[in-house]
Amino acid sequence: MKEKSAIISIILVLLMISVIPAVSAATQTTASMLYVSSVTLDPGVLYPYEQGTISITLGNSGNQSIGLSNPNIFSESVDVVGKDTWRTMSYIASGSTITYSFLITADPPEGNHFAIFSVETKDNDLFHYPLLIPVDSTDIIASISDAPKVFPLAIEKTVNLSIINPRDGVIDNIHVTVFGNGTKISPSEKYVSSLAAQSSAEVPFTVTPSQNSNLTFHISYQSGDTYHSKDVFLPIIIGNDKTAALPVVNNVALTTKNSYYDLTGDITNTGITAAKGLTVTVGSPAQATGTYAEYAIGSLASDDSGSFEVTFTIQDLTSVPLVMLWKDSEGNDYSLIKILNLGSASGTGGNSSASKTGSTGMGASGPGGMGGAPPGMGSTSLFSGSGSSGISSFYPVIAAGILVVVGIVLYIKRKWLAAKFRKQ
Image (cartoon, rainbow, N blue to C red; front, side, top):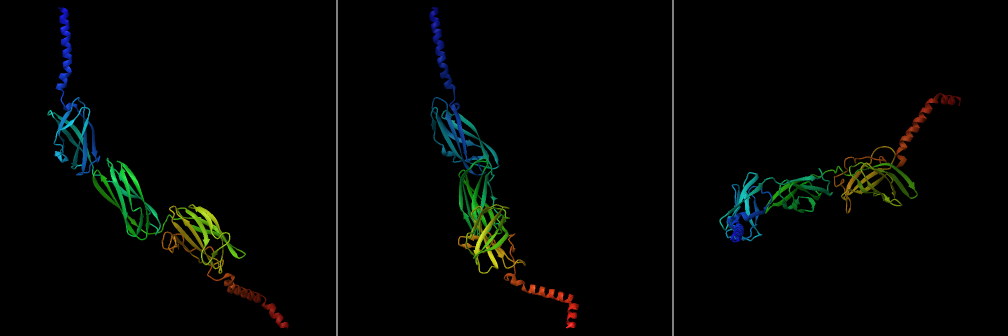
């Protein structure tokens, strides 16, 4: 009898243990089986009154499907667009997820706005989840980070546009267009796919002006699905290129070799930037000929010097144009013409002129079209003269000197000559 009672007791205990999970499952609410797996906001930071999308993904950790209805977002400063989008009952299976997306706008002021996501289960349970929505009116920062103060005429120069995103969210589809009268711009537009939060980008352009003008850099971009824009202005002022190379000629010597002349000397670059591919020759009316019709010095850095030798023929040796040709670091062609006055060894005179060289020949303006010689390229002469030919220009001076000497001698010997004449 005791054995029978023990067996019955064990069976009752086992039955009670087996009933406990079923009772727990019955008492567990469907809302407690839900959890939020992710929340995304696009854009990551809203402008005030700007429309964005917030998506909440729910997961089902239970072992049965859950019916959901009436999802919504409640907030005093965040408005939901189209609240009636989710009218029907949606079911989320065990171990699955469902994503609810809402179009929202945020009112001022700036800062973090708080909201509550809520959804109702089929069993009339409610599930709530807190949301944080940042709002910021800070715009992008755009400026010209690198550009010449003045632009040489018809010379290509680089201009850099800097775009900074100080926001905590990414901006997309950045499109920059540039326009301005009398200026060649390459390229005329550029595209940047995106710019991460707290980052910047440098956008380079090349500018070749033909007149004074103003450039406009128009920047459009997206924050989420909303477009924004900003303009940056750059005045184009034509002037001397203060950074250009400036060759100066020294220690010139001229010798005659049979049927031609040989001219040697030194060239020093007193400018700021290097003169690349510097070559030396002579211009009309001189005719370059012989072994050194054109002499290549090569790249001449700032404050560096190089020697040259040029051979040529000319009918009138009064003056010889010495032509120097070079390029800058961007491949623009420059030229400098130095007039060497070879008429005599005294006096003053001579001139030099500089120009930007085009594809069809030498221009008539200063480097980059600056309208004459740049600062430091004024009228100087290594061999100077008034334009007369050779020593013949000194004949009147020599004759006057001889007459003065003869007069002095006659004055000193006057008594001796008078005595001679009396004896006769």
